[in-house]
Image (cartoon, rainbow, N blue to C red; front, side):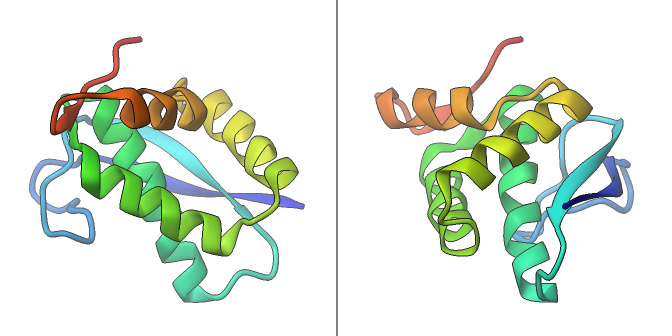
Length: 116
């Protein structure tokens, strides 16, 4: 079962990702989570959601994004669960994990900037 956790993405003075960088936008949406995750799992998955959102809101370092995805896959190894979470995240934010990771893997630049 997916649970949605409310996240105000990019409140200028307070919201920072785990790398200490201010997030770009000011969107308010919910991060989908699966029941039974530990606090560390939630942080790991949230880091990917943040990196994907940053890609759409001004750009993200390609290596940091791919690292966040690799860590996400340790928490969510199932392709079916990954697709389920991606659909829920896209429904909440209009940002696609799949499209962002595909773009990052094919990118020749250090930054990934998504349009859409």
